[in-house]
Image 1 (cartoon, chains in turn brown, orange):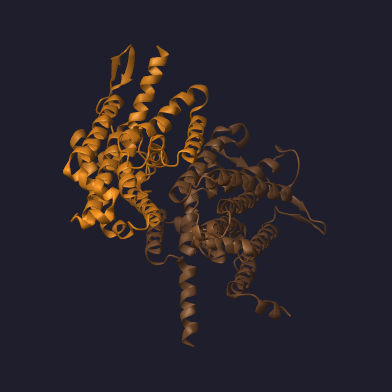
Image 2 (cartoon, rainbow over the protein chains, first blue to last red):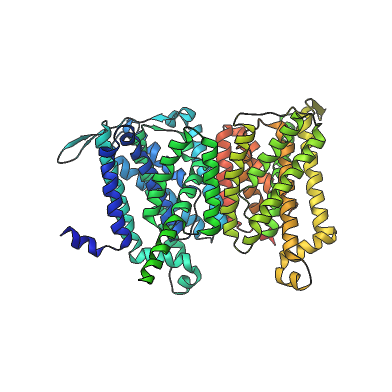
Length: 328
Length: 284
């Protein structure tokens, strides 16, 4: 039965099942600190997927994804601390996604409808990131300013059972399940008619316009969805890490996401997810003993990727497997 | 008189901003390289000045050395990477960001991550119009005018400037007329890097220097150049700087400093949307 379902999936989806099973085994295999910290890297993976959707599929690069991530994070903090006097964890997640969607849709339509594109759009998204960081600093009565905001982990009342997210193990599997759900939804979305239009915009926007597609509107929707996913990831991250600070929305973090996605492969959602997890995990391990050289190494790999491997590691793997298949 | 003081303050801030953006105006405005390493070049200029003055070299030759040093780094960057990507401007954005990542880490490894400071060569103030104006800041503002005028003269009045204008207008025809296009690209890129290094060196005594100091100016410089209009090296840079830096002085009169910066960025995004080719360009 399970085999039949698997057979209907394409290559990436099969691989995804393996990845999520392996992730689910990690607490049993490594346990301890890894069980605690890995969900936060999975949230970074969600952030990376939000960029892959926008950059890899639609061809729009954003240097402001962390801005949405921070918006989601602060919203979660405000809801769980009671500053926003309604809702709980689940409502806050949905609110975060909704807020990210609305902010991105407004900004996106404002710019795309006037034909703002490419480098100009990148600069605006950089500004967005700076604005979010500055607002987080200057509105300290809400956000705690430079000191950041502490977030209490909640107890979640699912219909069948109560899950206490204080424990690292329930928190791990809750985050993993949510990440898997986000991946599946995005995967289905990219294979839908709308997802194919986005790829069309990337490949030849003028042709799609001449075919009667309102590309400004489609780009707005793609940016809005990407903003929603990033803010959702940020909200989940805030719940898990228990802390949000202005630098979470800053330019440096925003561009770090670009580096993960470029290296891992911008045209693969799974690649971006794994890239976000792997690079941030490796960063925290290696940075503990040689931060500068690790960052230097990442920078060099980034340049090599841009020059020689446009589609990153995932693209290189796909190419190798295609070559193998054509040989046999 | 408070109004006069505010006007002088806004003028100085505008001119320092224009100096900081001048290198990007050349590199992005003329040859279309989306130089995300512009901030890193400013940072390098500041650190090289710090290193040179620390080695006992007087301030003025130290600034020139720093600018030449950054120009040389720009030459290496152009020669080994950028020149293969002039046809793909979007890739230059990513590559120059890679340059930023690498150069920032090299700075941290060589100079350490702590704050550094360069002693101001003119620590006093000038008393004029009943105001006391910081002498060094006023000097840098004056130098900014000198630099912009020089850029304008070179671009409009010399044979090199004529060849660059030919390149900007029509690369194919310039090439057919016997211009060495790839050499012109290289010269313009290195000139831009030199200007960024010079700006970083001159700004160094006004700030405490850390490995990310140039990024303060990176996004602002992009807005200056795009709002001023690509290719309008002098008038565009000044108009853009008034919008981005000068206006902040006025906004911070009514609200906090950090919030004023946010307002300026929102203002800049709105302007960019309605004047995508620059405030000056769309008037014609």
